[in-house]
Amino acid sequence: MPGEQAAGGYVPVSTVGADQYSRYNTEQLQVRAPKRKKKRGGVVAAILIVLAIVAGAGFAGANIYLNSLNQNLAGDAETAEVIEETLTPVSVGDDPFYMLLLGCDDREGVDGARSDTTILARIDPTKNKVTLLSIPRDTAIKLEGRGLDKFNAAYTYGGTAGTIEATKKLCGIEIAHYAEVHFEALIDIIDYIGGVDVDVPIAIDDVDAGGKVDAGMQHLDGEHAMIFARSRSYLTGDFQRTTSQRLLIEAAVQKVLAMNPTEYPGLLMKVSECMTTDLSVQELLGLAQAFTDEPEMKMYSAMVPSTTEDIDGVSYVITDEAAFAEMMKLIDSGKNPAKLNYEDSTVKSSKEAKKEGLELIINYGDDAEGNPQYGYEGSDSEYGYDPYAEEGYDDGGGYDDGSYDDGGYEEDDEAEYEDYDDGEYVE
Image 1 (cartoon, rainbow, N blue to C red):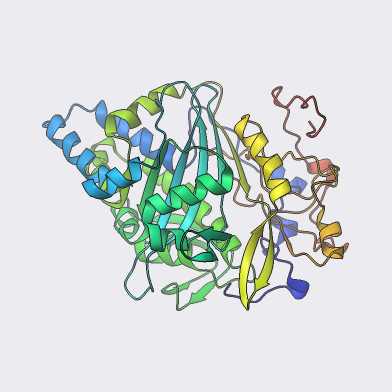
Image 2 (cartoon, helix red, strand yellow):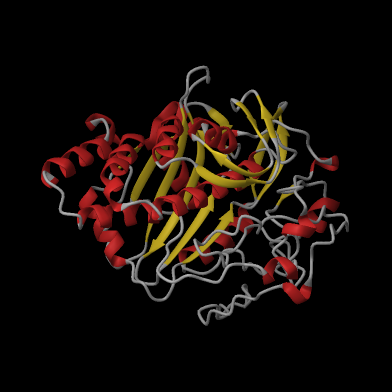
């Protein structure tokens, strides 16, 4: 993993001003923008909004245009057929389903195209709820015919279909749909919408990512937006990059929603040029219509609970299978995956793992009950993302960066978080 690693091997998610940006900082909580109704968070939701507006615009040649979009979205027919064999499609109406979101980087000079971003999404239209599960790219898996390898190698050797199969095996679920975005084409998307305004938390000087980006509020064109999204030149490597990508997503969503509707047809065509999916435009519209305006969309997020380990001189991310099994129970039932009960003996705390020489990867520090978080929960930001939710950490040895404030913690009070009968999960 590029970038300096913290002493003892523990990898905090960010070293950026935790006191200032922590979700537990009461001053930060006080200045949060109020919730806005009828705004939906995330890339998929933004695309759906665009589709809905275009469909209602009544522009000439709609059928020809939609057919062209569907062809672009489907991609190569032979490849699409192979991918479809790995999917267990369901109607995008009322029932919840799993959808795999892939971001691949196949630029020139990169040795083999690999899936840089893999997110398993559980989408529940009826309850207006989306759960996102990030799978670390260096997660150790066994590939048929190759043995031990890293998760993103599944894309290199098996393409999208290979990644879908690897995700199904890792998570123990069936996947109904997928969407794949190519990073290179996103440059044109960002330029088309006039660039985005992003508060860059850490200055970037990364030749591998393509250049430099200054810290602070920046107006990023497509090229610099991709540098921001690609860079792993941080103490925390891929984990800080994940934060950067969410900041970029939120900025792009805000820009798209502020666009003149007359610009949407051109934008939609560009989106179809950089994204492939098994869903047609009509199915995407059906999914958009299935989401209701009330209650406001709730978005949960988590990362596969993991440890790091060197195997034969190669650094891997190792899945904590016991903790992950418990997390998947929560995800599959539509509950917040960050609400694992760490008093359960099968799930080790960061301090316990540290004592045993493990390097536990967590997304932010101890919560109000003293339980280390494997994931970060759905935020109160208007688009469903809290770019600073992950800041602050405990090194597992008793260090506290000062960001924790019990009085500033906002407990999720949704009534649906009733305890399981077996007592494994807590409110």
